[in-house]
Structures are given as structure tokens and as C-alpha cells.
Length: 370
Image (cartoon, rainbow, N blue to C red):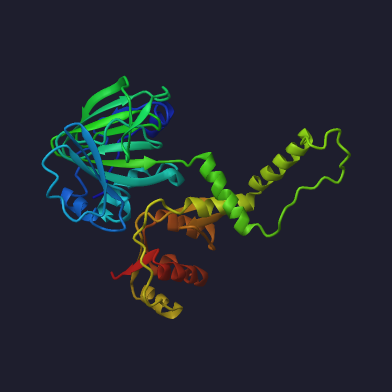
């Protein structure tokens, strides 16, 4: 199924994006769930997939982490199953993120799906990302507060950070096809009314501390020559134990120059930002194809399918995929970004075939017959 989203993006970005929460009623008309609760429960049994069960029985919060082997002892209410990065593993569910691909894709995180029983939720909390919560089967009541109010947080459980009482600016139920957008920093609490499914499309940016730490590691591994502080115009200081302001400024400039070196910075960011936070369904080819076998399969009608949600992004004049640079012309990189399925006619150039052969053997694309 192809999902069509009824949002005026210009109005939304101007008035709501990272500013205030909003409910978008029937943004998906005639919404059909792409996954069943049983399928979701099956995914949560897999070792590679991040999942958890959150319950609130008699006012006592608990959280368990997958993989799970059974669900028989959970009862009929006040528990929910949450599965991360379902777009990496379930093709139909992955189609739900297609309408959001007009937004900057380097900020996209994953599609998290939640199945909840009567009265279930994860409690009042604050997320460090922007999220579009799509209501599927059933109903949920949401209470959302304003952002940047210095809310106090506490541990309701070692794995659950909750927020103290807040004044909701949204207190409404949402039903199938409705979307609740919540910016980073807004406290919110959703409680299921009967059984329900919801789909969270998350957009996240990393902290400056995380980025700086990762960039420093990259410099250590990739800077070809060491850069030393030098002061050829040094004069005897009045106080040799005091670091002079001009010395501090020179050190700052030395570090800033590294960040402002386009090739170094762009290569780092392209490689860094295309590594996902959650595992992908990447399976390297057991017996690697050689070039002639690969070309023959494509010429005879075999098609290549891209692994769901593998990141391909462009930085400057280059493309990047899963932590590595793509050595191909930009028109081909554009094609790889926007096309899930490839045929021979699209990639028949010898250099392109050679690069795609490497990607197929690594498991980034895989063959299907027509």
C-alpha cells in the first residue's frame, strides 16, 4: 500500500516544526495498518531487533527488554510492546515513512511501532527528538505540554525517566489516520483506550558533544600528518606560568581550522551520519559474485533491491552509504538515493557495475528475479 499524507508542509514548518505540538486530523485518510500485533510480537522475538515491554500494574512501573520468547503472563491490560526500527525489517511498514522523505533525511531516525492494551502507555516523559505519532488501530488519549519549561524528571524505573506534573496544552484522543506531532522537549503522555497500534516517525539530531567526540576520533584515524602548535614570534612573557590570551586564540584557531577544512569535515560527516543507530537487515553474500556473473544476471532481467532504510546521503560533491564514500557520478548517486529497485539499463556503465557489485556482495542490495 502507498500512503498519501495530507499536510501543508510550508504551513507546518513555519508554524509547528520544533515550535509547538499539533494534532493533524485524518492526515492519512482511510488509514490501514501495515502490520498486525502478531507480526510485531514476532519481530520482538528476534535478537537483532530492539524491543521492550513497559507495564504499569497497580501503579508500579516495569520495563523488560527483548528478545522475548512468549507473552502469556502479561495479562489483558496496562502493558505495551514497543519495537524500534521496524522500517529496517518490515517492507510494508517501511512504506509508512515514504511521505516524510521530503524532510532532511540525515535527521531521520527510525519507525518505532507500539502495540498497547487497555490503559497502557510508557508514562509521562520528554523525548530528545521530534516525532510524528501516527494512530493506527484503536484510540489513544494524549496529553502534551509546552516545551522549555524546566520540567523536573525522575526515575519511575531504572529504564524509565518520567516527568513530574505539567499543564497540558493538548488533551485529546486520536484515532486511525490522525497524527500527533511533538517537538523535542515537550512532555507527553499517551494512554491506550482499548487495544491500539501507533507508529512513531522520529527525527533526531545529535548533541554537539557527541559530534565533537566522533569528529575527534575521525581526525586521529584519518589526518595524514600531525599538526603542532607553533609560535615563531615568541617573546619572553612577564609571567611564564600564565597562558597568554593570544596563545589561547592560536590554539582555538588551530582546532577551528580542522572543522573548517571541507574535505576532512564533509568526509567525516558523510560517513558518520550514514551509520544507523539500529541494526539493518544486511546479509553479505555467502559466495561473492564476480563481475561477469553479476553483469549476466542483470542483463537477463534480474533486479536489485535496496535493503530497507539503508542510509544514502549526499554531502558536497560526494555520496555516502553506511559509513563509506560512493565513488560514482552525482546523477547515479541521485538514482541510488531515490530508487529502491534497479535494473541493468540504469547502471550498465562499467564503473557503476563494479561499485554496485561491491555493494551487492556486502549485502546493501540484493537480487530478485523478474
